Length: 336
Ligand code: 6MZ
Image 1 (spheres, rainbow, N blue to C red):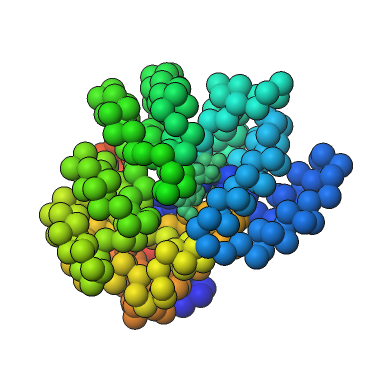
Image 2 (cartoon, protein in one colour; image 1 turned 180 degrees about the vertical axis):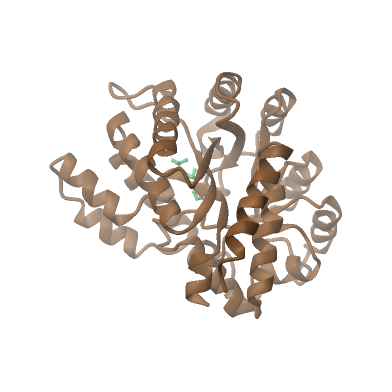
């Protein structure tokens, strides 16, 4: 099954750029800066709990705070997904202003430049960008990022395709009015939802109807008080991006066998597997498929179906979906 999952042509729809940075890239950045990041690396290794994981992002951010480091990072992340047989990747990232080093515009420009570069170096993977809003950073920052997302969507519609609402779920709010302005111009919306219990906010998000939802950890029929939310989610048919290792390591699910994958899969709800932060959680998309297969007794045919159905949730045109599906079907004929 390991080899099968590795060979499977896959779609990654939930990957945060700075959470996806591998230890190899961190070592490369440390040499570039003539600094030793061994302490940072050991903290990343030992990361547990949702709170601890958000501290790790601050560490990674301190290493990717120039356009040069960000370019290297983005290229490396794309290469690594490509090596894992990911053929379609939606990267999401929060535009960052670093005094004296980088403006938010330069931040997005650099990622787009790296995506363009990857078209030459790794033509087998298609990469799109979602501009993230970090809910912890407040209204003004969210407003700025959404304005930028709209500006870049108009300039590079084939690359910048959506908005991601993310950040520490225990802080800030979901900024739904701002997200609406982005949706009105045609950007797709992926929103983190129910990573921690928050019935009112989850209901508001479900009523807003984003194009995709991330996690939905605290929505399943056996959780006290969440049956109403579960029914609402099922009725909405909004695809859910599920990140098994991330939820387990952040301790937002008690065990893999109790993961919401089970309830959503049994209800035939649209879902896809994703890594979330492959660097921070030391995982790959192949491993996530293997974990799902082992935990929920999925066959190779089930995994193929999962990949094929994910195509429909990608933030691309109908024509691009058809092309992607044809590529997948072609590759699937060669793997056993
Ligand atoms: C919520 C998360 C996340 O944007 O700097 N992020 N937000 N829940 C999660 N579950 C573990 N994992 C990552 O990548 C890092 C940022 O992505 C969001 C956080 O805002 C984090 O700071 P970028 O590329």
